[in-house]
Image (cartoon, rainbow, N blue to C red; front, side, top):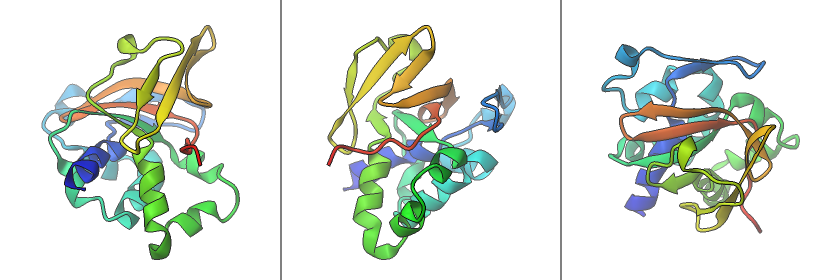
Length: 170
């Protein structure tokens, strides 16, 4: 369980500011240098819902792990797009296992940069199920989520920001 929780550390990684129109701006190297993923996420407004989910899953203490991790991090807008009441339900203590399963579906062990991805590639997530990578002229997709910003470095991994919450298979 400790390893699983440690892998969640990448879920709240971020070192840039994301606007609603899908433009991203990286933080300076000096701002990123030495920061762990928790510190970066807490200082990033567009990941506040992800931070709240990680807190509800009791994963904060383990989210300062060494990694490396690859995280497909959904934005606040991605969480807002879930069916009405879904997020609120997931954040309830009695639904913690389901929340942890969803969060862990966004994490792959190891550091996978965008240049390592290929069309049709499958990657096993910490949750245990595979995600599928799609690459086309329109961009990169992880399952049905579009990657809006890629290769955001942190001290313990890399983050690719996505526009949807991806759900593991039933």
